[in-house]
Image (cartoon, rainbow, N blue to C red):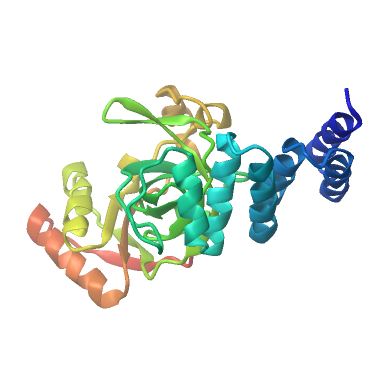
Amino acid sequence: MTEAEELNERARELDRLGDVDAAISTYRAAISADPTWSVPWYNLGLLHKYRLEWSESARCNAEAARRDDSDEATWWNLGIAATALGDWPQAREAWTRCGINIPKGSGPIVANYGLTPIRLQPQTRGEVVWCERIDPARAIVRNIPLPESDHLFGDLLLHDGAPNGTRLRNGVEVPVFDALACIARSEYRTYILDVPGSSEEQRASIGDVAAELGMGGEDWSQSVSFLCRKCSVGSPHASHDSELRGERPDLAVAAAARNERELGRLIEAWRHHSGYDGYVGTQLVDV
């Protein structure tokens, strides 16, 4: 093993042990030992990515790409960092190098890459929500996250490119990606609706009604599943929902609207659609 390889391995171990500053110094020593080798540049860029240090991550991945322009992982991480920085020419080049079909232009990428599940707060709670992916590293939240997630319907997320578990969509397993940062906070707010005496069918219909109005609606008691950590980052199976649901017995109907006036429009439209004529209580959630 060469000196550069030994230093690179030592840096990886330091990073694993949580001594990030020492890992950075050791990666730099590996780079000095072999300035032509791309791997320590890539590893250093990866470390800066998880610290959300986007300028350094972009620089390191660009250096790695100069030494090995065939490594897709390098280009992918460069694309993420460039997206975080709003460096759209660099992001477009990186995604193209990864073989992704990018719409023509020079500014932000806004396309339809379909719905994808994103894990919020991957190091802690790990709630997974469905999001509208608008480019290879950005997605808009289309579920109403639970209040403890600190996220909102409509948040624009920057997400990682490495799959971390799967979820089913129309009977097909699709990869889950971990959120890295919230790029733009949503204008929507989360409201809890108290609708005593409503049926499951009536509560379920709020989603379709809200979507028609450009808002969000969800019966958490039907849409939220509880998974152990092992299943969350793998392929979930049904039993964990019943095993863990007792942790949150207070799941309710949620709505996402920009203000009280919009919320009132949603409630009236839902009443008309569902036939529900009972009391509707509303509570703004502090998220």
